[in-house]
Image (cartoon, rainbow, N blue to C red; front, side, top):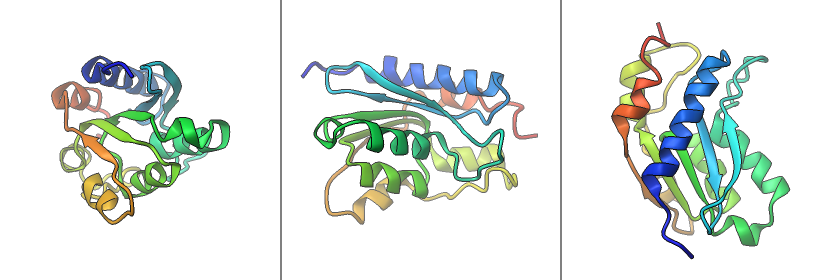
Length: 158
């Protein structure tokens, strides 16, 4: 397997989060990358149009991936996400069986940006804590490029 360029792939996820914002959605996105470095799926936040509070990009991507791709492939995949996966999304990543998570903005930093916004009641719970409760290891790389990931949120949350 080739060495993945974590920064370049994370920048793609951050760029997708900017596209999500431009489309009128919450500024979050993620990409699923296969073991050879190919982007298998892209997912923007899915809060709009139905105001789905569980429409986090990572959770939606994991539903798509787990129903469309073989488990043998998923166990060697990496998710690159603009912000650290929340507890719900971390659970979805764990249950889908991914190998690795690479994220930009921490939940703690996101909470400082969003405050107590009703559309994003951030859980300041590191994804490593959720994964540590599991029976298998999920590698976590992050925070990485946190300033770039945070910039997409500037002025969005009021």
